[in-house]
Every structure is written in C-alpha cells, then in structure tokens.
Length: 471
Image 1 (cartoon, rainbow, N blue to C red):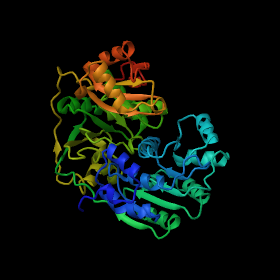
Image 2 (cartoon, one colour):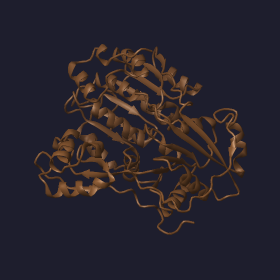
Image 3 (tube, rainbow, N blue to C red):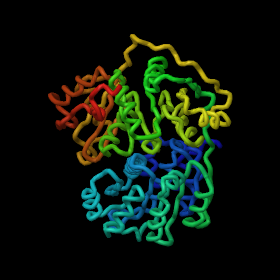
Image 4 (cartoon, rainbow, N blue to C red):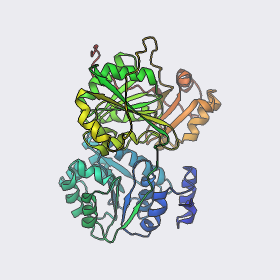
C-alpha cells in the first residue's frame, strides 16, 4: 500500500497541526484502511496488533464526535488490561489537544475507586477502562453509558480469553442503540466474529498487513537439561548481554522468584504481574520503556499491550501452553526495523510444548547447548535514569519547556535527554545515567522551568518482594 498523508482526511486544520507536532505525517496501513470509514461513522472490525497505530485510528474517530463538557460520556473504550487502558488514555490525551477541556478518565482495577467516583461526579467525556471496573461503576449508578456515541472494544480476542464476555455484554446493552462500534483484535477466531455480528452493524472488515520480522529475529532454544532454570537464565543473560529484555513466566509467583534472583545477582530486574499495586506497575513500564530498566519478568496478562520498539530480547523462562501465545511473546522484539533475539529455555518438562512449537514458529530451530558461565562480567547498569518533576499539563508544562530548562539553564546536552512524558500533575524525563545528579541539582538550585521551581526526584524501580538471598 502506498503511503497516504493525514492531510488527505477531512480533519480540521488544528487537528492536522497537532498530528504534525506528534510527528504523525503518513498513515499506517490500519489507519489508511480504517480511518475514512470510521470518520464517516461506519462500524469497523479491524485486525491489528500492538504497534500498528490502531489507537490513533480509533482515537481520531471517537474524538471527532466528542463535545467537551457535554455532561455525559460520549465515548467508551474497553481494554483487557490496566496497562493497555493507561496507554490508550495517554494516546487519546495527546490526540485531544485541539479539543480544550476534553476530560478523559481511566477506570481500572488496582486504582482508587473513590478518585474515579469523584471524577465521574465532576463529569467526563471519554472513559477508558477494563470491563470489570466499568461495570462496577455502572451497577453503583456512578456511570451512565446511555449517551455513548462511540464504543471501542480493543484487543477483543484477549478480552474473550480472559473471560470478560459477560461483563462486556452487560455494558454494551446499556449503551445507545445507534452508537458506532469499533472492534479491534490481533486475531480473528470465531468467537471474535460472533462478537462482531452481535454488537456491530454492517461492519467493514479490514486487516493490516502483518510485519515480517523473521529476517531480523534470531531464535535460540537452549537445552537446560538438569540445570537449575534460574541459574541457566543468569548464564544466558551474561552471555548475550541484551540492552533490554522481557522474561516471560506463566505464573506471578514464578515472576517474583525469578526477579528476586536476578536482582540478588546484580541485574536491574523487576517483576510485573497482576498482583502488584497499580502505581508500581506503571512505574515499571515507564522505566522499561525509556531505558531506565534493563530486565522485566512478566506474565502474559501483565505484558499485554507492552509497546517498546527497541526491545533487545524476549526470553521464554516458561514455555506457554498455546503456540499463539508464543508468537505474541516473541513478536515484541525485532520491531520497527530493529533486530532482536527470542530465547527459549527448554527443560525436561518442556518437551511436549517444544514439539508443538516445532510444527510452527520454531520449525528447523535446533536445541543449542548452554553457553559457558561468565563469572567476571557484572551486568551493566541501565543506560538511563528517570527524573520525576512535580509539574505537568495543569502547570502548562510541555516537553519543550523541560528540554529548554535542561539544556539552556542546566547545561545538559540534548543528546543526553531521552523520552519525556508529561501528565496532568507530574512529568517524567529520561536522562543518560551520568546526567541524573546534575539535572536534580540544577532543578533544585537554578531558575527552574519557565522561571518556576518544581520539586524533582529520581524514580526508582519498586523494591523486590524479598530482600534476602532467594536462592
């Protein structure tokens, strides 16, 4: 498909200016296929995975029908996990800049119910949430979805896998019958097609071309044999030394044990699973995405929606029960033109699962012997550190203001500044590790940002669940 510019769409000039500022110039395949129909009000059933631009696609469509401060929510986006809901809400806020005073609320488990209740009482325009929490607010008469003009079901296949179908059905029944329904899914199993036929009307089905990463991805399967698997993992990390890695385990308890073992061995590693506090989960994702954390040990549910273009390695500590899950896992590396490695640790109890994978994604991949242990090589620290600045959009801070203060006032080179994330009341900036202390001192003693001083501190990874030697 030839590249199509956003300027070809019938969008207001201010919207096009905002897209240009976000460096959205040409549409991705899913955007080019779905946006014209969605902007025209048609239901769309789209096949697209993480990193394809689908959020911007349905985001522009639902925002085109929003009237800020209208009194009742005009759009509802349902997501399978808290992390995905947070990412979707962040993207919608960026896209909504041309619509001043648009109020977007995330409602998910693990966050303060009272804070969500207060926001709902004050009035919101767009709800992004997980089915369970959204339905709970509805049953307690805190949330009225009767005026919803656009309903989005994101990662519908995952919502079905996680057993959310009854909650989703209850929610949809209460929405406006003439709503627009947009359904996106990485796969199109029969259950997703049934969902579409139940909730959508004359939906246009579109499918984004799947990126072929095979030429940039290297598969390695190590024969762990009778070795302790965690010791084998440490040996593999010491041999490959990836810049960043996500290690997949099947259970949250295993995540904690593995993360603690890696931390005790000197690795900048943290667990991510559904048993963690939401603040800690958000912190972990922030640090990994901006290079301030090297190793994440996660369950499949927690890592759903994880969107990092330059992830160096994916490691299967536990083999998944389904081949499709394996494909989703390894697909998080070798993205956006980057190279990556997918490593699988195969123990004595993994033979059956490994045989199934050899009929698909691991065809012609032979077992490799474990690499030799590297005794003297200490794991390298993360390349970046993250500074939190207690000021955000409500203080009229923009990324450019933060960059200006760091470069002009404090003397930090622009090349030492990484990703910047500005939220309502707080901002985060990644800096090369050597510049963290200089930035904190400069923000504390200098002229500040826009001639105003904001408190700043270094964001640290959550403390491992156990401080003792886990071995």
